[in-house]
Structure formats: structure tokens, C-alpha cells
Length: 172
Image (cartoon, rainbow, N blue to C red; front, side, top):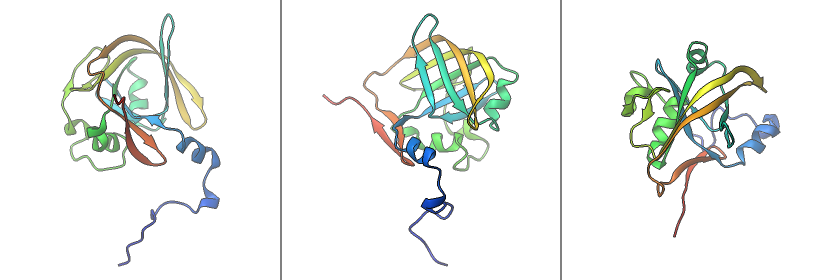
């Protein structure tokens, strides 16, 4: 058996999408989107548009359990993940095993929008207004933000950059 230092499934550089490589160089927040049922997915491609009403816009995998849940549910809860939540992020992204399902890896608080990670530094609840449009290979989801809860303003946020996790926080 030989152990290699490179990723065994990573295609040669010449075969990689330059668009995906560019996107990978953008620091992205790591959030967990959940819907009643429950269903959930780790999402980093999102945008919050302030206004009246404020909107949540995100790109999700159209083959995910969450996309299936959106066919029957019209709400979503978004939990901001922190540095201690890397394993949870990987489990909901389908990158690591989660015996019994990823919801067994943490404690949850039920809300009208879906389960929220107990102890998260911030979360929001939103009502879907569009879940049928595609953008590239993703499902483009738009939702009206109905509730925002901000708990710990000093907590670091989990971020993703070039295939690795890091944290972003304010230092005094």
C-alpha cells in the first residue's frame, strides 16, 4: 500500500475548471441550511440582500435532501457555523460519514423555519419565494428573511478558502 501526499480524487490541474478554481480563492462563509422534516445542507454560496423585505439568496445542490424538502416546505433556517463546527459542516456536505444522519451530531432547537443549531452565534429564518430557478449547476433559492437572532457578537465564524477551513473574527 502506498500513501500519497496528493488528494487521490483530485483531477490534474489542466483538467480543473478555472471558474471553480477562481471561486475557491474567494473566502466563503460556512452556514447550515435546514428545513422542517428535517433536511439540511452546508451552504457557502449565499448572499444577504438588505431591504424591505430583506432577502436570503443561495445556491444549493439540486440533488440534495434539502432541495427535495423545498419541494414540500416553504421555510428555511440558516445557522452560522463556528470553528468548532467543522465536522458538522463536512457531515451535512456529505464529505464525512454521520452514522444515524448528521442531525445526530449536534443539539437542535426547533423553530417555525426549521431546526437551528443550539448555541450558534447567529441564525435567521426565511420563507422561500423562488426555488425553481437554476444558476449554473445549482438551484438558485430566494427567500424573504422573517427573523434574525444574534447571540454572540464576539464568536469567530467558520470560513472556507481553497478547500480548507479557517475562522474569521474581530481582534481587538
